[in-house]
Image 1 (cartoon, rainbow, N blue to C red):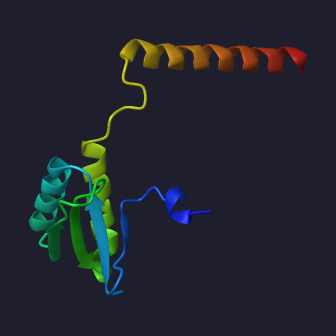
Image 2 (cartoon, helix red, strand yellow; image 1 turned 90 degrees about the vertical axis):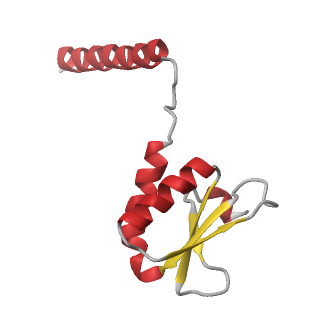
Length: 114
């Protein structure tokens, strides 16, 4: 089984130099946003664009010592460009309402049976 298929992060240890961590992004907008955050926080990085890679094209190598701070910036970047799981507002709030009704009925049933 390929364990990398189960890894949902967008960073890995550098393949040839374990002093660095590599972050990778699919779109130019994400990579530009991440790069600006790195510059604002004055963190060293090295950027690379791989036009031949079909999935992830934009790479950033950072010092492993800064990884904790950079993971926060990475999460901020991913959150900025994240799409909701259920994009239709009616469906999303309808599902929340339905779950609240089910929970209410479950609680009432538990209290009546006790």
